[in-house]
Image (spheres, rainbow, N blue to C red):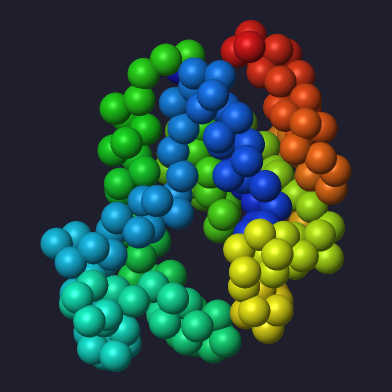
Length: 196
């Protein structure tokens, strides 16, 4: 089984690529979904987050208020580092577990915070960078996700640059055009790898 990571920042189009791959019958895994899972009340990162950030991060139903926590950490670099230090380990363990359970010819995993060490950790065969111009990504966040422009800019600013992401990848998918154009790039890559 080939293991391929999709590296890309917020608003770049990783979810669009992942959905297209799933529609083609491939196993897909989104690190954002795993990140939500590991902070649930009965999961490993929950207590550590409450200990680090206080009960103010809890919603009325006593789970993590992700929107509130995001508003805190994406405007405070120290808080973001603390969040990442708490959650990255449990996320990695869960990603490995789910990838090991995958079946089929290929498994694709979307990693918004891709780092070089993920290649070995997840036994990746290849990394595809999904990138778009920052102005386009910003507009997608504002219009598509109804994010406040300041929040969207803060999240984009907290991530590595496109140049850094491309340098870590084997393949680059530019997503400045239409969804159909992005799908065509993905289909070409699948064909080249015998996965179409």
